[in-house]
Image (cartoon, rainbow, N blue to C red; front, side):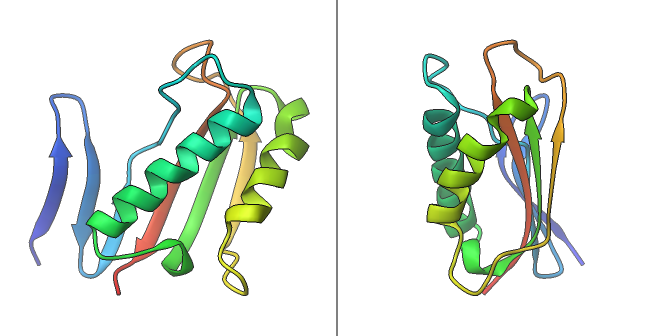
Length: 116
């Protein structure tokens, strides 16, 4: 099976598709002035856009990994997540505290999904 890559850069591809499975790179906010709710909304918007480009959507997420710079942001992130997640399709998910690539990043989200 071939591997299809989208938004390929020198360091990473934003999307890889293999055998009907979509793998997204870790998604982070661009507007670093936002609080956890704002960064979470922005990041989930990136996930929506990339999944659509790959022929999938949030109801097809197989696994989600969420990295928070500070676990004290867990409830704020979860409030936005619970508004966004597809009804009756909450995926398996892990949320951990991690030191992220930039100190301004409050959240990074990694998603694996099935194509439609």
